[in-house]
Amino acid sequence: MSYSTLQIWGIIIALGLGSYLLRLSFLGIVGNRDLPEWVLRHLRYTAVAVMPGMITPLILFPQATGGALDAVRLGAAIATLAISFWTKNAVLTIFGGAAVLFALHFMIG
Amino acid sequence: MHSRSAYWQGFRDGTPFLLVIVPFGVVFGVVATEAGLSIAQTMGFSVLVIAGAAQFVAVQMMVDNAPTLIVLAASLAVNLRMAMYSASLAPHLGPISWWRRGVVSYFMVDQAYAASILKYEQTPKMSHAQKFGYYMGVITPVCPIWYVSTWAGAAMGAVIPAGLPIDFAVPITFLALIVPMLRSAAHVAAALVSITGVLVFSFMPFNTGLLVAAILAMAAGAEVERRMARARGAA
Image (cartoon, rainbow over all chains, first blue to last red; front, side, top):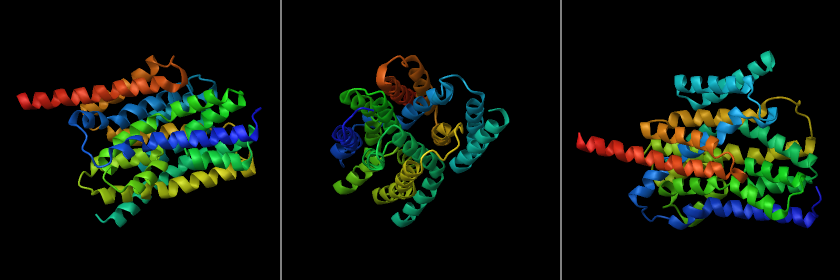
């Protein structure tokens, strides 16, 4: 890394400020004004539109294996999905998924 | 529900995220200091940027000596989803005071957003004060422990055994949060378009394919909802 101390702090502060403005954007501007129904209809799907896409590459092409499909991670993902559908409980799912992940890691990893 | 009990409910729901936050914070601390950042700079990232994925991208690009503007563009692209979270939370938290919205914005991390939006949708009767209380409850265990575990990783160095699959803590948590959200055909359609879209647009630089996929997925969810409502109206 060949940045000056000033450059490094510049990156950190600019990134912090930029991230904050992204987070504040709509929440800050919209306030308590009512949004039109078609906008609300789209916003209802934000979470299911962003999060599955975010994790799909992490499951199929993990960086830790250089992007190769990995039985431990794929198995843990399938088990997590199954536990989630079965229990409908986020806490149990997180613990169960983590348990399967480490079990598979030490058995076949 | 009192806003105080909403706070503690959020606190309980936020606590399991520590399984993700602790290893991630430690790994970031280790990676950042090994890349050549001081402990103060590493903490600067976790306190000022407070977004694990973007922080990892920034440090990775700094290791490659990328130009400053490219480092910023790539990392902010990873955080563009926060603007979508902000829009999605606006109908729920828009009416609270401006300084509270300022606080909510600073602590807007994936786990806080996902847990809160799930709760708000499952409990439509919550007041704005209760929704704010719940959100603050979720971030109470998550964000301070993010700082502490970053510091622990930075100060103690490579104490975690190499090769453990801790990178996978994030997908597991997200799967646990997504599945309960798939309540209707519209939600399922949005999720399927999101998965397909991110694979189709994976050639796009700086993670921008995810944003295209997300916009298409939101449109898909909204369109399915509109058609289902019309079919119900016609029936």
